Length: 238
Image (tube, rainbow, N blue to C red; front, top):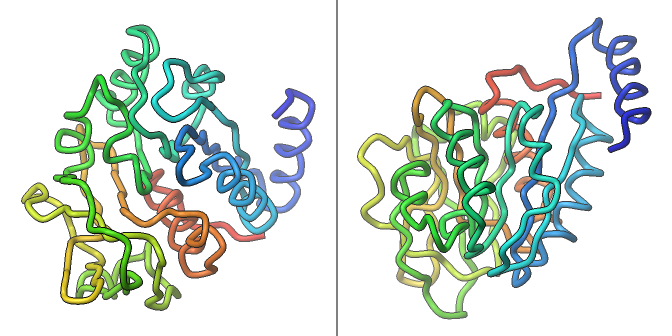
C-alpha cells in the first residue's frame, strides 16, 4: 500500500469508525504449493472490503531465502503467516524472532507450522503445535467444534465446514493451547485449530488454509475474526 493510499484509508476510517484506526495486517506469503500469493490477494480484498482493515505484504517463494517487504512487520498490528520452509538470512529471521519475543500477535495458517526451515522450533515454541507431516490425499477433512470452540469469539457465526486438503498430524500439541476445532478424515482425527499465548501475545493457528479454504465463507470469517481477536480488537465490519 502506498503512503497516499494509506492516508486515504485512514481518513475513511475516521469518517466511518469515529477515529478508530484500521487494523493493520501484515501478510507473510511464501507457500507456493498452496498458492499463498493468490490466497492472500483474494483474502486482502475480502478483508478491506468488509472490515476496518488495511493490509501490507511481505512475499517470497517456498523454500526461498528472502522475504521482500519484511519492513512492514514494524508498523503492523497483527501478522498473517503463510510461508513454507524458508531459510531466511539472519537479519530477517532475527526480525521475526524479535516480533515473537516481544509478544506480538500471530495468525498462522496451514504451512505456518513449518514456516522456517532454519527455525523449525517455531512450531512448538510459538504456535504450540506438533507438526508431524500429514495423512495422504483421501477423504475431505471435516471440522468439529469443541465445546470451548463453540463459545469462542473467533468462531462466532462460523458453521462447521469441510476442506479437500489433507489432514495434518498434530497430536501432542502444547498443553496450554485452547483447542477450538478437531478435524476428521475417514477414521483419522487430529487437532485442527487452536489459540494460545506466547510471551503475552495472542496466537491463533489452523492447519486449514488451501486455496479452496480461502474461497469458503466460513473459513474466511474465522480468519478475519482471528486477526481482530489476536490483536485484542473488537471486530469492526464496514
